[in-house]
Amino acid sequence: MLVSELKPIEEIIKLLGTEENIFFLACSGCSEACKSSSAEELDKVGQALEKEGKKITGRVNVDFLCNKVLVKIKLLRNKAKWENADSILIFSCGIGVQATSKIIRKVTHPGTNTISLGGFQGVWMGQERCAQCGNCVLDLTAGICPYTTCAKSMLNGPCGGSNEGECEVEKGRDCGWYQIYERLKEIGKLDNLKKIRSLRDHSKMLPKKDVRSLDFYAIDK
Amino acid sequence: MDKDKIIIQVPVIWLHLSSCSGCSVSVLNSVSPKIKNIVVDEVIPQRKVNLLFQEVLMAASGKLALKVLERNKENKDEKYVLVVEGAVPTKEKGIFGTIGEDNGKHKTMASLLKDVAENALFIISLGSCAAFGGISAAYPNPTGAMSVAEFLSQNNIKKAVINIPGCPPHPDWFVATIADVLLNGLPKHEDLDEFNRPKKFFAKLIHERCPRRADFDVGRFAKNLSEEGCLYLLGCKGPTTYADCPLRKWNDSVNWCVGSGTPCLGCCEPEFPDFNAPYYEKTIPSSIEEGEK
Image 1 (cartoon, helix red, strand yellow):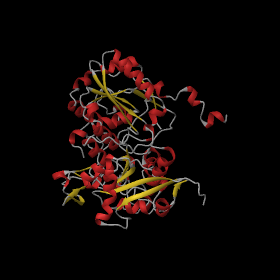
Image 2 (spheres, rainbow over the protein chains, first blue to last red):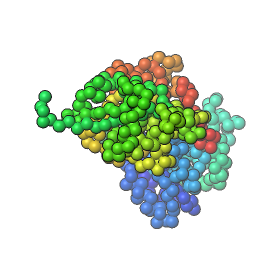
Image 3 (tube, rainbow over the protein chains, first blue to last red):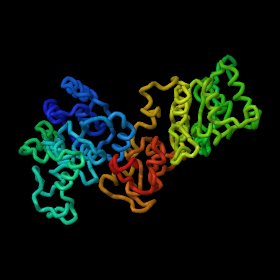
């Protein structure tokens, strides 16, 4: 299970910028268990956004947003809810955002930050991964995580060592930033490359203090 | 036997439309209770099914058999439970599927369903064809086959429909639904999922309760059918299919598809069979813009 927490509403409003029609996509797996995608939380976010003049075009829950085929099936079943939306606000871990970005060519925004629970995490067999860094930047990178797809975890653009989309660190590995550039081009958001991603706050990657005190080592001390 | 004991009989009419009768074969093989007990005995104390019409089971044939349906059509006070097996062929005024005659002309399945559904208490769509169109409505669907619910909605017939999909459906799903209705009445809105399937059986993904889930988690995949390991790379649809097969299993809980080393085909989902094909290959999750497959 991956643990996530809702982003502050001010941050979500900032992410959405001038976009007016927003579609909510929420995970009923891990993030619902963490209450970051529960119906009550989504209601609150929806109300706050409506106060800001946004329109919620619809809301769909997927049992596991990390399952791309399931995401596709659910989106196809609910086309009317998202086809006129300017962007999709996603309530799940970073993997859910990345899976959705792979399935649909629309602007995606993470509504949550994925945080660490001390190595206790799910298993994902795809190439997209989430580092549970608590500093989600998927919003600016078209739903592809630069931290995990780039071998050097570059946050503000490619290193210059990639060759025709291939990473210089590992033969056969796709360059994360090449993929980000291509996807940004597809959704018409190349301007995002000019925005600076701020320094990573590594303290967010630590499990919370009250959680740390719950492992066997701490309890048996 | 207690002479004063009142037994309430619940009349049931079971129609076969565009189907292979596999749903009947599956459900008639119910193990506990046996189909004999369901048809002859009390399903629950003082409640008994009175099966008026079932093409596979009934001894009568021809006009004699069809009289039952005509009698029920004429007598509007006689309500019954309607079980429908198979999809409804609608193209060319429904001529691709007929049952008996009406004034010397073929009686289409579509018009028969329309007549019989009017007087039904509620309808059970048994099997994926009746519930969602299934194989009968698969591309290119030359007969214009559609699900029972869609057909009723197009003809403005408002009836409660419980969908019990599956190709075929598990006998327990059907028997338990009938018993539940006899005991507690029609299921409440919250007891059914978005496709009117009882949540009792269709609430969880097969993948969540699959005994081979641990293999998936560590990346141990079968390369050939019948091998040990997760069958995902061989096209298993367990991660996108809702049913309790891993717990209930089939044939008196002897085995089930994945247990015997063959992938789940996703037969309980509305997209079956078109979206799920090809069956023995992993589904490639392309983007929606690249195509709906």
